[in-house]
Image (tube, rainbow over all chains, first blue to last red; front, side, top):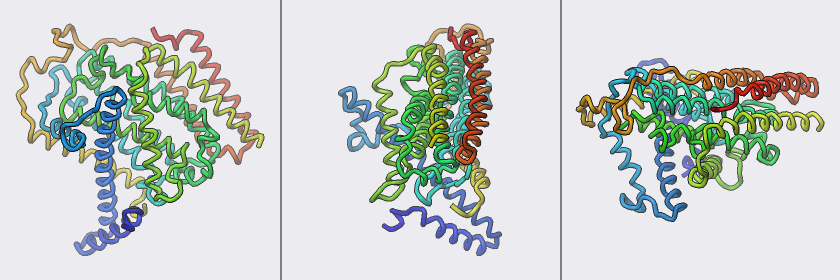
Length: 345
Length: 120
């Protein structure tokens, strides 16, 4: 039970064991370290897959109840095994590279999109001692490695050789880079107050969650995050009624599953970032830190899902206007106001 | 977590992510049926026969958005260290950055007036 509440204590034991094993096998001690890092990453990959499964189930169930339906019910108790059934179906489903596609770019695109999300996820502080990769530039690292996802989407859209994919990919890219600007500037207020880019220190510096000092920043971050993940009400790139499925129209089976996985991993990363920067991360009374972290992230994820099933879709021009003409000036205003208050205090 | 250095761990993470995804594709390849036909290989356009290729010249609007993004992204890279050190630097840094940001916002206003932000 002790390790269940403090999973961070397990790692040194594991590392010691692996180093011992490496020495016993006649390898350098470093081999144990590499193996330890790889094991942690495999664990995180499993965590990713599990989180996405839970999220997909939650999304379908919540969507159902919001629309006065009951959602998946048939497979397992209240449909809990539906996600596993869907995964198996996606794995055994036939998939092929379309004849008009640029074969290698088409094949690589899902890897780029997923890897960007996964690399961002590993730097999140999950608990007081549980940051898989602890960097003193954590915030810059996360926003920097998350961005190549756009390139993956462009690769997918262009290489498919399908006009819907091309339009969807271009729209996705334009939208994601447009909302990246207010998203990043809204983070600046938090960085200014805490005076550090280390996510762990930002969490520790929050006696009071920063949402109290940065309500506008939080709002801008939330709106931009929803747009960044291409979700409703900003899902123009995937608008089913116009573009069939946007940039992944030509993808099927396991490769489609990777895009799906990446979308939810990105959603998780942005929610976790919002929880870390604005809601106090793993801080909280009574429960272990990671419970608080997951609870706060879950609350924001619920908001994401709630938005999706409540709002109608924007038009493309409204979308660009919202980013460049409203959110970006507002984010700069927030930045200057924060600076002014900090200087005057 | 201790053990490897942070950046080596990131390299390991990159390797593990690619390995896991490739393993997934391989497992799927073992189980899935594969019989592509010429009709299946056509791009999907809702059942209509496709007209022309998808490698077309695309609207210049997207290029303008990308240019604007690059300008602001470079500025943000500059803003991050400034924001992190803001408390030590005080009023002087604030005014310096104010000048810098206002010049850039003039740029945004100019682009706005020129109609670069108009989506048509």
